[in-house]
Picture: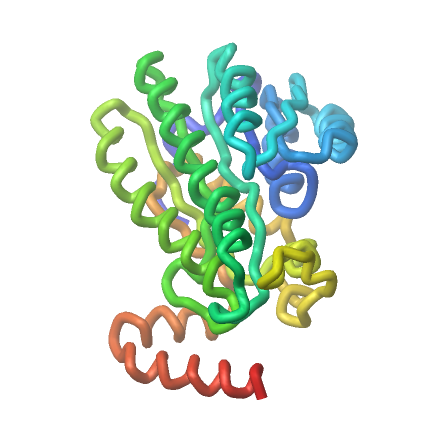
Length: 276
């Protein structure tokens, strides 16, 4: 599991979780709640955030503050940043995101832009601000960003999503190096399929909801298990943690590094099957 934890988030420390209204974000929030953290919970749906806040209070959170944020809306992101950073923050988990289910040819520009706004640009903005907040306080803060195994290769029918995750890696790898001397850690967590509503809420090429659960997502990992791995990786200040049970993700990463043409051939066959 890596080196021994170094100064893990302790009871009473303040943790901001985005995308906290369900799925992995909710599981991460509950995980930190069990440790007595003071939580700041963000997502678009206020009613769902309030539900999660109550569950976190019951789990042991010292407090659970609801801060509504639409990651596709720059003004909303700015307002949430002002509220979240109004008091000292110890960790941020950048989790909110949206999937895609469309070929490149069938994806309109507005949908591509929305996915990049939500999955990359909002995280880049919040991560930058939080890292600066930690450095200015002289505190060993943590920036944790949820990426995907699709950051290592692009699946056909998922191009905008894969692109947004590739962008996260480039940006946060650079940020990690730039803030290391200030004692700020940046941890990128890369799950495989997780049993959440990701597929149902994914966007088609026109921007409509996909509206159905893919079999691979339905068979995915338990969000609580992925959340536990994420929190452990953050505690250990790991640079990167892949959380993808099974051989397929490992094999794909190895092929991408060692035999890329073989991987591209497999992806072409998959695309032909899906489009046939």
